[in-house]
Image 1 (cartoon, rainbow, N blue to C red):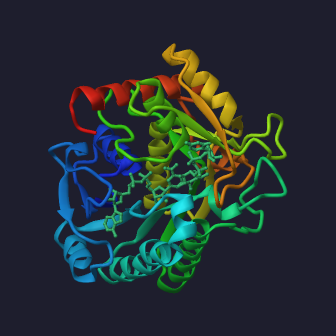
Image 2 (image 1 turned 180 degrees about the vertical axis):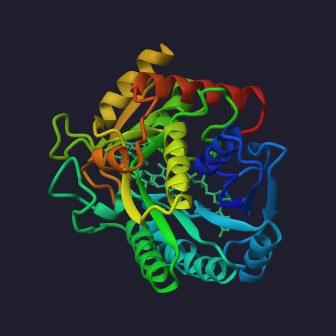
Image 3 (image 1 turned 180 degrees about the horizontal axis):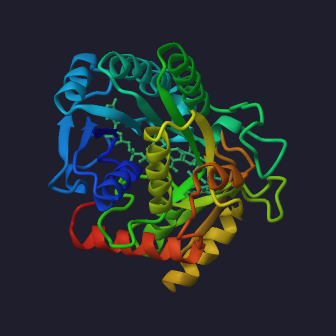
Length: 330
Ligand SMILES: NC(=O)c1ccc[n+]([C@@H]2O[C@H](COP(=O)([O-])OP(=O)(O)OC[C@H]3O[C@@H](n4cnc5c(N)ncnc54)[C@H](O)[C@@H]3O)[C@@H](O)[C@H]2O)c1
Ligand SMILES: O=c1ccn([C@@H]2O[C@H](COP(=O)(O)OP(=O)(O)O[C@H]3O[C@H](CO)[C@@H](O)[C@H](O)[C@H]3O)[C@@H](O)[C@H]2O)c(=O)[nH]1
């Protein structure tokens, strides 16, 4: 039995690949078009199929050749403000291409799917921390593009007798504690990545997008989950499905929110650098606060996070950013 990881050369997917290898899974296959991923992020024992997840012939051949029973689908476009300016590009990448992938995967014999969904499906939730059974109400095209894929997967699973776990990630941050991977996209827009780049002088300053939100300090609240903890959640989800477990949808977060200004303080404190911060207007598509109701995944899958500590997450992110600079990569 082998696992196919789409988007495995990207930030979170590469940590999933490492988690699989560390756990002794001997056949891991990645399909990635390297649009935002890096082949060097993959360990040498992993097979990389360079291509598009919507290439149904390629997907089917890969699944049959490697006798794949489980699919972990990470490949996507992921930047909320970009989805506001290019909605059709996001519906193509995240919805239309996922439809093609799911069809080809089921046709070629895949039995289990783990799907990378997002807290963005909740939009601006009335309840915080947000439970999984709150009716989704995304406020940006990114969240909508992902929610439609959740629905397609649910319907297709019911019709074709396969099982799935949808994981709704909150804000993913940090890096592999052993320094093997991290967030490597040079022009990434994620807060902790941008802040570490500002601390290391790779950016002149950091902008805070909005200080007039209805939150304690006026900046947005997010629940930051460490990337290896998230990868570990996928491993327990995979074991659950292979063991005959039921399909389910689970939040992945720690259940605690930090404001943008709090995160900046932590990055300044950990790095020892008082980098310039500019207060700017709100960014398109941002909900004011989003924090995970985090109990269900622990109860259902027995997931126990190991890195629930913002200072530790920032320390890892800084170390990875420094290492990227030393390697002259990005
Ligand atoms: N980063 C976060 O905070 C976050 C939060 C919630 C959900 N997610 C979800 O997690 C998943 C992974 O995100 P990430 O942060 O690792 O992003 P990423 O951009 O680092 O990784 C995406 C990977 O998918 C590949 N890819 C994209 N389109 C492809 C296609 N059509 N065919 C083949 N490969 C393709 C890219 O080359 C890249 O390697 C995404 O589905 C995203 O929506 C991320
Ligand atoms: O330079 C920056 C970057 C971000 N922010 C703010 O920081 C918060 C977090 O932003 P960001 O790190 O870009 O993440 P989100 O927009 O919350 O989205 C992330 O988290 C979502 C889940 O909550 C995922 O679905 C997305 O893929 C992922 O990009 C937001 O309030 C931003 O406005 C700034 O103020 N300045």
